[in-house]
Image (cartoon, rainbow, N blue to C red; front, side, top):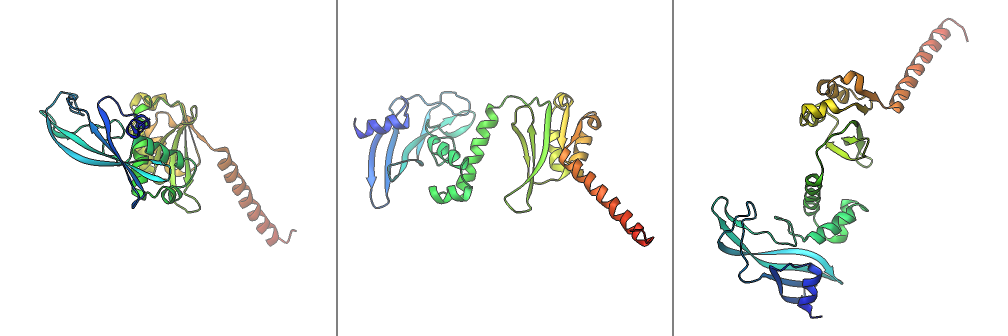
Length: 266
């Protein structure tokens, strides 16, 4: 199998594109794969899909999966078209999402690594900046949200979690029937949870049958103000109930002990 055909196969290049050349650059430790659009391909606006005339081309580069020990870079002169409605826009390429500097396969690799290691470790191993990794995560979340069906949770849980050993908390809303995360807020403030509630339709709010949470006042107040009949739907975490009960018993014990000591009763 020839080199260009080999890369066309592993890249999954479709009929409208072809591998024009492959270069090994030893000085930088890179393999550069040059991809070009085939002649006479009909151009369409990537926004509305209307056939549109060509305007010019812009050179773009994307990082792809490594070829053995060499970093692999895809290079293409991507056409721009002139749409009557949307003006001059660049066409989509089949190997990457719009605006990304990485191929879809490389982004999949990064997401797989993030499931196993911290952002710092992935950054170090793959030689990526924090901003690059954040962009990959944002696009992955956007794809997941686009695939997700409309929200119809019946039993939800509101909980807080801390980042590592620091006291930086986030609030997490999850569907207790499916285990899916529905919302993550940056802190435990009432306004952030209420903003999520406000994004639900009246039908979605009414359909919620129970809201499990700890006894954090911000969570309680946001739910009381947003969910119909919330007084009957809030279910407190039994571990927090037990903690508060234990604290109350201990408080009474200490008060009674102090009173008995004052009376000289041991």
